[in-house]
Length: 385
Image (cartoon, rainbow, N blue to C red; front, side, top):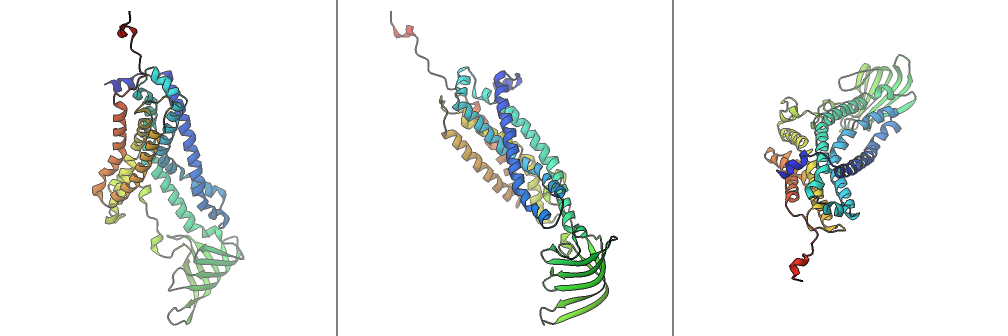
């Protein structure tokens, strides 16, 4: 009851002071880490600009679509780091000493951070349930479109253009209407059916798996891997798929990262194999449970600083233990998600991992272990006359 009444009271000036420090630090650290992760992850898309001649706008659009997923992943960790750092600095500057001397209990000192962590938890719910799946779907759709339709504007006159690692196209001339002249295609996508195709003219047309080129008046040369003979085929018209793969495996299938919660819990039978159903359900549970780790990690940080024996100058033992516990929880979360994605019987562990550490840390904060400065016995009790 005391804890409930504590949260019904308006924020005091001391609460706003702590809340402001934690909030500013959280925004700064989160933005810094997101920028760092964005920079490292975006390096793999630089090849699209350097080697394939795409505009910086395409690069920016691709990488920006990944930012919501970065934020959703790092917010629980940055919340712990910021809470641990701010309260440890308050202890090092003896501000916690003054606050405790003024009668502030551990729960009262934790109140502004708990309010902030609840807000961050709601933000993570919004990201995990709506924003991240939508951004992932847009990212994969745009990536698929670039990868399989890029040949329409990559082909340049007089240049051997690598459409993929095993597909190279040369065009001698390209008219304004899109007609190609003097075409040579080196196709090694199938190890058993490697071919070199030469044609007088051609035209690029869209196809279900990506762009296709219709070749006119040419020859197809194939080397028989078994006999070593060179087979020569003359054609008046031939169609070649310019997508990175010539099989139907490159068709667009949704990944569990871009599917809604409803579809994850009720996977479409025509889209998901039976062995992948536990993986989809584990993803749904992870999205719903992961935001709760924000509160749990914040409580672990608070418990590591505000509980135990009181020291005027703070201490490093408990904060280091809190860091070790949180690192172990992050690693344990990865293991739990991996196990649950293989067997649905372990799905409750996802909730247990998200909630149990916070419950234990909250219990430690609620214990009546308020350390007070010892008071000297009154003079009357000494018997002096």
